[in-house]
Length: 517
Image (cartoon, rainbow, N blue to C red; front, side):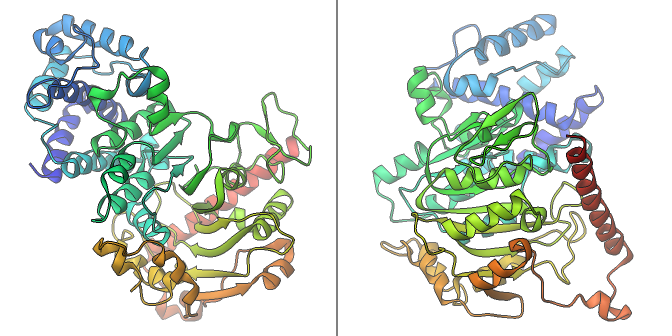
């Protein structure tokens, strides 16, 4: 069965359960629990014959044997007991609850949908893509609010191509959502033909780490990675707690509460929304009077702006010469006070080499004006590390919507061609996977860049002299302002106005909060 066919089959049944008040997110969660139990059972049988991590009586055959109220009672008991286990089991089933109140519908989901497929024998791409498809459908459910955990996949793909991860590098996403960045990096590395056995093994265990604040989202991320073959298999989910935690590809915690290791690469889209629920205390000793605070003397400045804190955090978890690509809203580029301090320090202590100005209308969260900032951490020195910041403007005169005109991978090709400075030819080796091809070359080739209409370079001195080190830079003329005949469709104009108003309201709300403190 194809991934699309599988998505349709699973999604059609969701519509049946919607009549009982089950949300898309609830359905996806129940699917996750049941898929895990089914795959663990499959792997305990021939030809795999692996020991099952699920205790007898709590396993898939036990669920198949009962129906009616007995099924609901047993299922609730299974979820409760497995949530107490260490390792991947604990992550998948932590705080799990049965949301399907009708035992007959639960029975049909178990017997007719999930038990009919041999999930383990399905190609990882098929079951992984099917799960990704369900995550996307869940993100499209505006009322559920799941879109904030879902970054557009074409954007992720282009960012990972630009970053060109290499075998043996460790890769972290401290705001991983459902795991899109980690999976894209995995896919690019797994497609290489020059990996030896040790590199392939490390790719599945020990290369990736995702950190996520919300339990239910961590669960979706863990299952997404698992279905793609990352982080072991269901049969390995009951490793001793110490061993299990060492190899887990995802954890639930507040990433901003402290360092959780150092990595060669960080790829992230921190959550939108300006205010942190806590105030972080920086090296400058300043803090806001709130009941809960986090002491981070490794931060340059104290702020309650969540994205500014994530930017500082990402710098701290990079190894020396480690590389980062971070999706950030416009306010990070121009906000004064702590924002200016952080931008100036970042320009000095890192090579901040590329800024991609993203178009509006590509995120599920409405009114978002965002960018991708690319930078490399460097050792301490007196001279600033940033020499030139190259800015690519994909926003001016570009109009995208989630449904009528969604962002596609080809819309980002010109950016990649500019990024690598030679029409993208440097990626050929990495794409072909030939031995020795693309090892560090794609990344180094960014030094051969040439300015274009949409791609301009700004020197460190130019940036440092700008008021508040403001990086909110545009140079293209908006065609809609030049000539009324060029005006976009009314729907697009309305969407742009809504985006501007929502962004302004968010800023006013933040100012109001600051005045209350």
